[in-house]
Length: 290
Image (cartoon, rainbow, N blue to C red; front, side, top):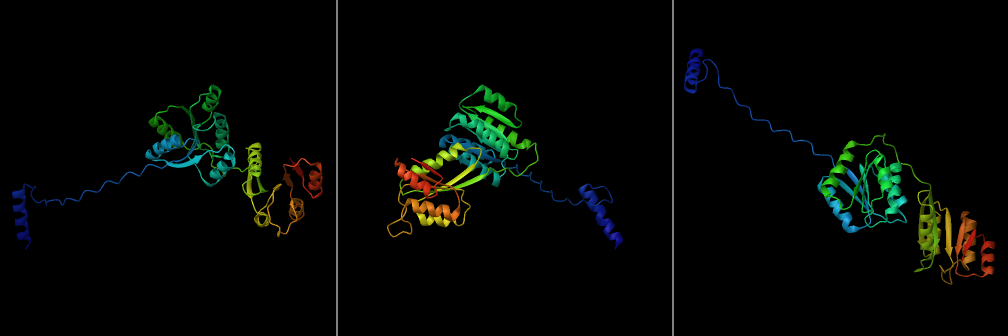
């Protein structure tokens, strides 16, 4: 039996030119090449006011493999809204622009990003070049300035370069500004209370996180105040209830707010009568604006 197999092996060696006494090696299937891991999708926050420009930059970033968060800047509220974004998300790069936004807000956007952005890189895109601002930005780590018109390839390459560099400092939970909740009582369609809220938010921008809600019903105001830590009530001199309501008038409502919640009450009025102001102060109103 052994002789038989030796003869077969020798014949096969002669026919296929194998060395005598050596069997044909079995060819192992080629291993599939391990695919390269996909490039990391960097998280980018794009702050702009002009929709066309924002969409153009966002599309370029998305094509380069970045995950883009859009933010349409409203200069009256942006500090508080940006802080919310920074608290809930970690961005590799923040792109502040003045496209559709006054240039004066760019330094504030950069300062907020540096303070609360958890070490995010900064790429400023601006149609206005101010030498001192550009010089200060150049001193910052992981920051760049690109003037409009900008080549999209250069823009995306700069963003990815700063994102890949990573934060220099250890990531920490962003700080928070002290939050102030204001409830404003105003009649339907009256914009006085809304303008007052916008003025307060702008006045304390970067110092306090001013939040406010304009309500057109005394019942809704009382319901929210009973479950939320309200810091200030603003009552406009306009009716919030019908004849069958529990309050006899504005002064009675202001007195109720003061007695029940013990928080400051501000009254807005178009009446210049000193008697009205005296009645408001007597009802517990802390400030009366005409």
